[in-house]
Image: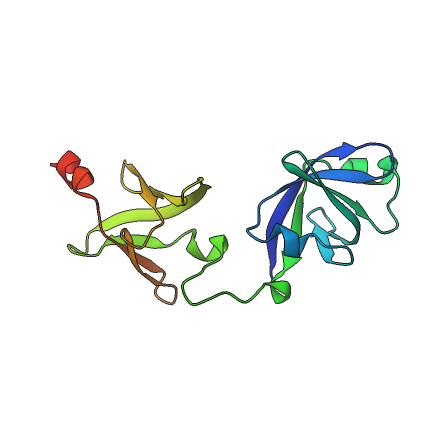
Length: 171
C-alpha cells in the first residue's frame, strides 16, 4: 500500500482537538469527509478517522475520532496527512495525479531535445505550471494542451512544444 500526501497539519484550532490543514489535493471535498480514513505521517504512522470537517479561511479544520482534545493533537503540528492509493479517485484519460507528473523527463516534441525534469507543479489561477529543471536552467511550462503535447507515463516522458520566445532566448 502506497501513501500519498493530501495535506499538512499547520496548527491546532481551539481546545477541542481541531487541526488546521493546508490541503495539497485536487479533491479536498472528497478527501476530507466525515468517516474518511487518513494517516498522519509520523513514526510510527497514526491512522485516524475524520470526525468533523469545516472550512475556515484558506484552511480546512478537521477533528479526529477519539482525539477531541488539543493535548492529543498538538504533537502532530507540521506533519503531513496521507491517504492510501486504494482510495484514489478514478481519473479521465487526460487527467493525472501530481505524483505521476513529478519526475517526468521533458522532451521537445519537434527536436527531441531533453529539456529537463518536472520538479514541481505550481497551482495558478488560469492553469497549473510545471517547473522543469535542466542543465543549469529552469523552465516554467504552462500545463495546457498547446504546450504539453503528449504524456507517456510508462516511458516517464512528457513531450512539449516550446514557445517561440524560449527558442529565441536560447540562441
